[in-house]
Image (cartoon, rainbow, N blue to C red; front, side, top):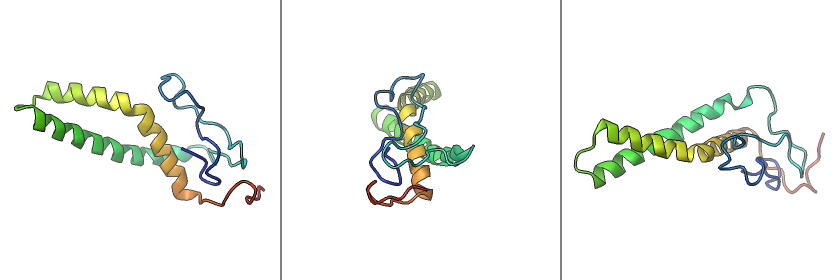
Length: 118
């Protein structure tokens, strides 16, 4: 969850991962190279597809774990387990999906001494 351009600056404030009021707040730009983390309004709508892939993997893993450890999986049991796991991992999947999305479109350009800002 570092800057995609220099891999030095943090995209999110430290200590806010499990602060449910602030886990989604991103820094405006990288403190090392000046790269803006929201290049245009609505930039991170595509990150929802990455988050969807994470959620699908989580759902399959929970379903497989429940069917391995429990003889008969009920809908209530599955719903309760999925709700708890998805809510518990929400800050991580949110930040990872945004980090992956911005890294798809912005390439690494080296340490800040080598980066030329415009």
